[in-house]
Image (cartoon, rainbow, N blue to C red; front, top):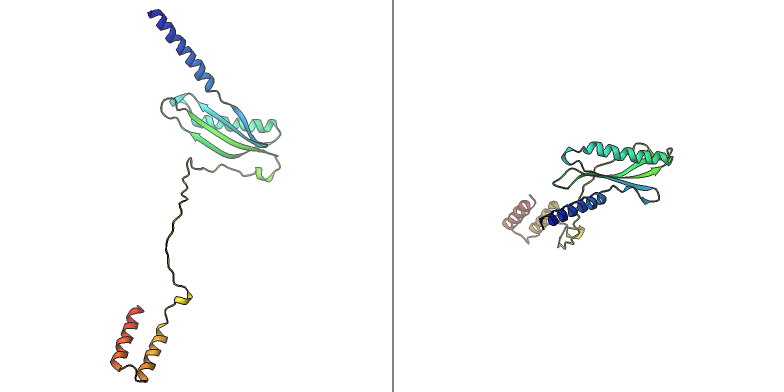
Length: 174
């Protein structure tokens, strides 16, 4: 019974290694559209791996692929994942397009970093905002003082009422 259990465990372990190994194969160069390709590679060396060497190897392979087609590999995007915890291998994904060597888009192209995650908030906010428009303009101070002075001269306002209204306008304009 003990021998059968050990044999069974050994068989399961071997099967797991075979399945794990076959599931971790790098797919090679994958065509995404007529002139756009992707090359992705994992580094299974764990903490002993070298992400820089992995990236350089992927880009070199993309360049060799382009050269075999008589073209130039121009980077579109890249995504890297450093070594993580248990089974989380370092990886590098490189997307590129093939262009003729004399194509002006092939000169001076470089990869710019992009975020791994973009959160876009698209909520609609309704707000009741009032702004002053031309019809709601406050009359200018000079015009209001002139009107008050005219009312005082016509005897409609007393001197004391005029002074009180004048002070009110001056205080509001500050």
